[in-house]
Length: 139
Image (cartoon, rainbow, N blue to C red; front, side, top):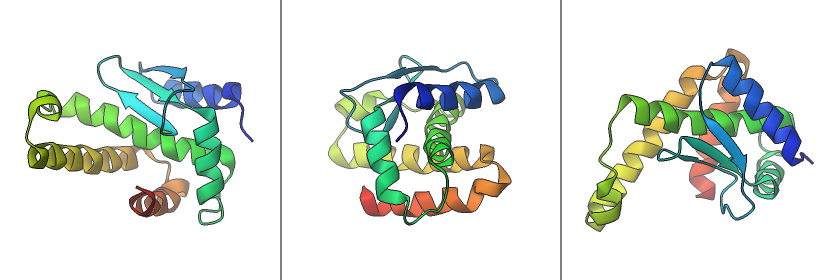
């Protein structure tokens, strides 16, 4: 089991490696393992959800817990990169019609996986792709 400080260390080292100025913090109220908030430029994580997600996927993706956290983190960094490159009109998510919201969320999700994949080290690309497929099943 990874503890809060273990996950914080993985996030810090990874963000430093890519020289990304993204805040990160623990949140025990977060309903997902990790989440990126564009408004605050913050990656939040819930260590219990992270460990639960790892337990769920570990038998399908044979990687260390540390690498599985990195894979989740690359996806979250993908959101950061997407919002940095594409100026999505977030007002659509608040005020748009259901089909507009769904279309924008789908585009953002696809982009985040694609941008995240660009920074994944070569030895983890297959695991990242597998995680992407599993995420579709679990969502």
